Structure formats: C-alpha cells, structure tokens
Amino acid sequence: MNMRFRILGSSSKGNAALLTTNGARILVDVGFTVKKLESMLTGIGESLQSVDAIFLTHEHGDHSAGLRGLAKYPTITVFANEDTAEAAQRQTGYRLNWKIFETGSRFQFKDLEVSSFQIPHDAADPVGYTFTTGTGEPHSPKRSVVWCTDLGHAPRLIQEKIRDADVLVIESNYDSRMLDESPRPWSLKQRIKGRHGHLCNDATLELLSSIQQPRWQQIYLAHLSDECNKPSIVERCFAEFSKQRAFNLAVVDPINGLLPEYVF
Ligand SMILES: [Zn+2]
Ligand SMILES: [Zn+2]
Image (tube, rainbow, N blue to C red; front, top):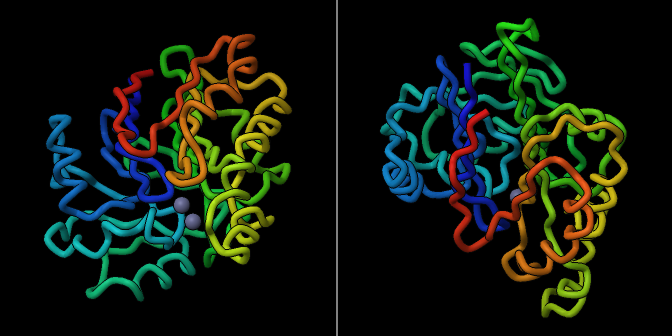
C-alpha cells in the first residue's frame, strides 16, 4: 500500500497538505479559505468533498482559516486536542464536527495510525503529527509522514519524532538578518525569535544535522516567512547538508507552494 503526500501550500500566510492512503484522505491543517482550498484541490484532480478528515495542529489563522467555511462540508471530521478545538471553535460561526484526542496519544483513523506530540509555540496546545501506515512486516512496510511546523525550539521528544519520518515537513521560518532588518515592531521580532516562536534557517539546519541515523527519504523545508526569508537563502543554507545525504530535500516556496505528489 502506498502513501501519497502533497503540500498544497506552506508559509506564514497559509498551510495545508493532502495525505491519501488506500482507505483515508485527510488534510493536515487548513490555513487557506475554503474557496482557495477548493480551487487548489480541483486543480490537482481532487475535491474537498472527498476529504474524510482534517488534522489541526493549532488555531492560528495560517493553519485554521478554512474552518470558517466548512459548514457546507458537514461530513468532514476535524481532529484536534481540546484546547486547540476550543480556541479554533471561537473563531468559527457554527459548530464543527470535532473529534478530540489527547496530546501524545496514539489512535487509528481508517488505515492510518495517528499520533501527536507537543510543540513549543505560542498557541493553546500546539502539536505536530506522525501519520503511519503498514505493520512493519515484509508484506506491509511501515511508512510515515511527520508534520512539524511552528516551533520555537526542538526538545528531545521532537528530535526523536522527526528521526523516524520517511517524509518530514519541518519549518525553516526566517533568516535572522532579514528579520532583524525588517520594519516589524521589536515585540513581534522577539516573539518570533522566542522559545515559543519559530525556527530560523540556522536553527533548523542545526536540528537536522544533529539527528543520528534518520529514516528520511524526503524532507520539505516549509512555513517560510514571506517577508523575512527566501527560498534561495534557505537553499544556500542547506546546500552542504543535503549534498552529503541520501534523502531528497525540497524548499517550499512561500508564494507558490503547490508541490508534486510524493508517493512512497
Ligand atoms: Zn502558529
Ligand atoms: Zn504557522
């Protein structure tokens, strides 16, 4: 059985990805309007109508904007922990079809095993996700996608989680110099740089370089700031790192982040 994974878009302005298996079709975050999500999905031969569930990382608008227009898709289940659901529900005009999980728990959704892990970020109870299929037996190899954006630093638990990903989505949010030189207010700069803010390019590089014997086949450097980062800067920063390794590394363009499907 294959997993098919596709980032629809990822930046400080909006995040969403489509993951499909034989039995499940899910979105990870919906940080675009429903109208935009509909057109993104139609453009790749998919539809929002056929999505079974949304897995929400946290309530910030660049991950949750699409929830507001979901009333016309009542069959879509929205998975989140309790604090995230509460915070996101307050921004939505009608009751969403919530399915609440405990952060850190492991559960089954159709043929996907889902687990969440806490990430240090300034939201109600933000999480990253691991989505796995397969039993690990020869006829059913394990395959996993780890989604980990919006984190101010990476505690040991996160290092362990990302090591075991076949496909890893990790943020490389800002270039320190571009952020320092940007006209943003001092308080916002401090928030972004803080322990519950975002990872800069150098911090993401340091994190990935520190992981011993990773499983990675494909890494997406995602959630770039559209004002304080550029794909060319990220590529330069990671050039040496990706040269020595067996996996493929792609930088998600914050302007046009729709990437080809990755099948594995
Ligand atoms: Zn956030
Ligand atoms: Zn974000």
